[in-house]
Length: 286
Image (tube, rainbow, N blue to C red; front, top):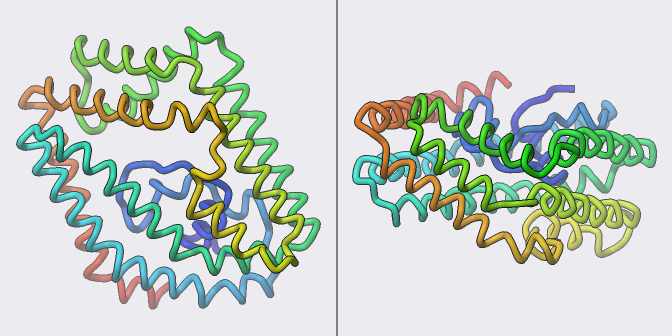
C-alpha cells in the first residue's frame, strides 16, 4: 500500500492530526504527522478504489492550493521584513483557512473510506490510537507540571531554532513565559483529543446509517463542535499567547536572525514554486 500525500491525508485528518508548519509539497509534514499504514491496512480492493481519488486530490492540491501557499509565504516575508505584528497574526488565520480547505476537499473520499472499513479494521484503528494515546500520556502528562512546562519551552526552542538560530537569553525567557502561561494545557489537549476520537468511534459504529456522511463531515470540517468545555475555554487565549510570543520573538530578533528567517522563507517559496512548475510530471509518475 502506497503511503503518499493525500492517501495518508484522507485518514490522518480524520484521526485528528495536528497541524505542523513547514510548507513542503513533496512531504506535507505540516498536516501529515501520521501514516495510514500505521493504523489501518487497506485491502487491495480498497486501495484500488482510493487510487483515482488520490490522483484527483493531488491535482486539486497542486493547482488550487500551491498558489495560496506561495502568496502566504510572500506575505510572511513582508511581515518579517517590516516586523508587522498585525500581518503576522493574520498569517495564522491564513494557515488555518488552508487546513479547512483541505478538510473540505477530502471529506467525500474520507467518508467513503471510513464507511468501507470492516470490523477488524475499525478494531485495529482504535487499538493503534489507544497505543499512541498511551505514549502521549507518558510523554506529556506523567512528568510533574513544572517539568511539562520546561519541556514545552524546550520543544518550542527547537522549533524556532531552524528559523532564527540560537535564541538570545531574553528570547528564551519569552518562550519560557509563554510555556508557563499555558499551565496544565497538556491535560486539556489530551482530553479534547480523546473526546474527538470517541465521537469518531460513535460515528464508525453507525457507519451504515444514513447520517454517517453528515457526522464525518462535521468531525472534519466543524471540529470546534466537539471541543471539550475546558479546551473551548482555553482555545482563543492559547492561540493569542502563541501569536504574541512569536511577534515578540520577531520584534527582538537581530539582523542575523531576521536574515536567517528570511532565507528560510525564500527557500520554502522557491521549493514550492519548483514543485508547482513540475506538478503535472510529478502526478503522472505517481
